[in-house]
Every structure is written in structure tokens, then in C-alpha cells.
Amino acid sequence: MKITHKKYLLILFSLFAIEWIYFAIEPLYPKDWLLENILVVIAVIFLFVSFKRLPLSRISYTLIFIFLALHVVGSHYTYAEVPYDRWFQSLTGTMINEIFGWERNHFDRLVHFSYGLLLAYPIREMFLRVVNVKGFWGYFLPLDLTMSTSMLYELVEWAVAIVVGGDLGMAYLGTQGDIWDAHKDMALASLGALIAMLIVVMINRAIQRDFAQEWVDSLKVKHQAPLGEDEIARMIND
Image (cartoon, rainbow, N blue to C red):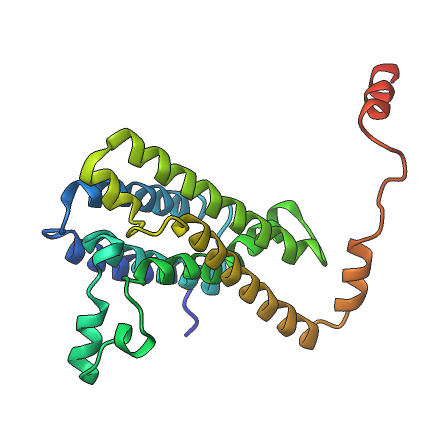
């Protein structure tokens, strides 16, 4: 029996709620946990409020679920202290950082990369269904929005760190002493989104019959007349 979008969303929400409650118990830094979960609450509320008018695909809901699940883990420990090395060692007898020669905790890098890789497709779906973009713009705009929101998040992190200050601010910022931390985070989010859109391009090119024509049409000029002062003059004279 086919699971409806509503039932599928409720299943994912139930799984997420179980995980969230589990990791909400005795977080390593309670105040940082509160800061980290503000955006989670906003995201969950948005998904439920928008469901009636804009139910997303199961693929999109699944990708969003995976990203939020990763974020919940990071918020429990703070991203700089997620013990993935200890977990991996208990399974394999060795540490990931030793294998790759890393000296810092890279869980935050994983989540920033996952932000682009996992959320670019849901963003693309909303662009296609709300803005009705086609062809090239259906791949470029999700990439562009993912990159710009990644930059915006880094600015929010910086602002919050300045406002709250002290150890809490540094725990929330999580640079681990890397002066290029924000740049690397944005680059990884952009790379993840680029990979996601390239995968979608390859799939659509293989199964969409009018793929090439739609791409060409999307790059054609739709309105020959210039805008700016010319459009203002036309609006005044009409």
C-alpha cells in the first residue's frame, strides 16, 4: 500500500522526535543546545504549516530529516566535541582522524557539506513549484540560494557569538582555532549543493525528453525592452 505524503511526514516526524528527545537529555552545554535548536524548531514549524499548501516529495522530506538528524547530534555535544572518533574506534579499533591525519573535529564540516548536499534538492523543488523556474535556472537558483543562506548562517553565528560572548559564544561559533573556518564551511556547503544539482542534472538528462530544449529556452531573452528607468517611464505614462 502506498504511504501518503501526510503519513510519511508523520513517520519521519515521529522518528525525529524520538531522536530529539534522546539527545535533549543532559546536553553537554545546555545553553548552547538551546541556541542550536532555535532554527530546528523554526524549520519543523515551517514544514507543518506549509504542508497543506506545499507538501513536498518524500525525497525532499527524507533529505531534510537526515540533515536535521545530524544537526541534533551536533547540538547535543556541540559540533566541536561530537565523539565520532570514539564511536568509530569502538566499531573498527581505529580512529577516523588517525586514518586521515586530521587534528581537529570535523563533524561540523560534515554537517555544512550535508547542508548543501541534502537541502539543495528540496530548495529546487520549491523553486520549480512556486516560482515555476525551468531549465538552467532550476539548477542554478537552488545552488545560489544554498550558497547565500550558508553565508547568512555564518553571519548569524558571528553575531550570536558577539552578543552572548564568552565560552558560550565560542562554543556556538565552533571555529576550533581556524581563522578560515567560516570560509571552509561555506565552501563545503557550496560543494555539497553543486554535487546535488549535478546529480539531478544527470538524472534529468537521462530521462527527460525535452531536457536540452528546456535548457536552451530558459536562457532566451523573454522581454526585449530594457527595464530600470525605461520601465519606470512606461509605468508612469500608462
